Length: 494
Image (cartoon, rainbow, N blue to C red; front, side, top):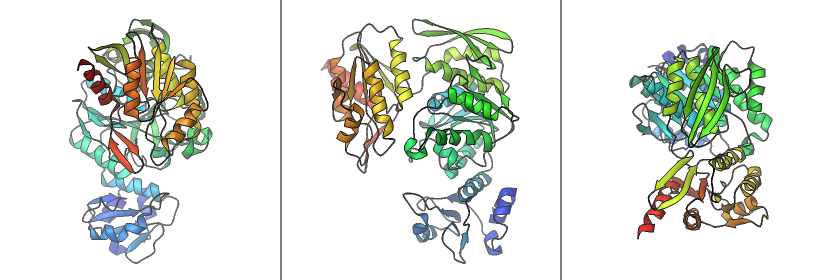
């Protein structure tokens, strides 16, 4: 389509480009990107000026790759569209959404510190049980109703770049997928990657210490999440909030006058989907819940008390979208865990319990350990984890304190040290605590931890979950907690 047709689809874009010279408007557009390496013939190239890179330095490279339209905040030239305004990233997102304009009818955004990946996947599972073609988008990639992964982001972003996100949504539309749940990170929200997408559902799971290296304060972090509900949702959108979380209640109190359809969840009496009672029978959580003045009983077979909230979050948005409660509540018992989320590893040569989890925040780590302790463990609880380099320094000692307090043995090792000295990261976690075991090298630490285990012990390997790489210095190397565990256990037979 021509550039004029692209901007005429949106009143917002028409206003922003009303002064653009006419010769630009007749140019054919085949795609949009802010990465000069990804552009092709007749693409639009957005030259972003970021903290780490400056797209203006790559304008010539983009032109060599076929770009006809360059949009920049800084450069002024007759062959460049100059947009020196604060809405630059918004314009990019709206252009991407306008270009990839065919999208699934129902798109749900899931935000919060913990639980996003599980909730998006649970939504996909419930929709599939309901007979609907569906998909989930987020940290572990894109997964459709057939359980097939067909896209994994090379950028490792929880929320994809606007161009890639809209492109993938368009591909899902072409596959006749009508329901999509996607993870909405605080970075993605505040950087406007979701703007221009027509959501008809949104979920808030919880908020706890994370990403303060970026947001600087919990208040800023909360406001980043709040932006999704205040700026990205239209009237009539179904909204589900965990009212048992203090920030969830804060969010609800600040947006409850908006014209949303609320189906909130939790024990709180204000919840539309109210949890009345929870009982643990062996590995099964038996739930008694109230909805629409009726009492229902159901169960979930997932490790971790917090998975109850993740399951209810997915159920609540399904109810808000008009699905029958009987089928939704029955389907909860069929939910399967997501790779790297309280993932049990069973092996015939090991009678101890080994769990891999993505917990990389203080709150998530505490919930993971306490969930394990509720399993009536008769042996020792071992916790193994590290913290990422060049990220939120403040949470390191907090995670150490939580592990030391709640575990019988804690092993501190490496996560993704990046360009930081791994020994300094480990030292900041341990923070002079004498009971910690420090083992450099994550593979070495996992093997050593397994050698400690007796039959009734439990080992929690936290921090990386589903991830299959480890970043050390400038290198990103293949690494997978699951594979290290499996290979170690297999070797016991040698």
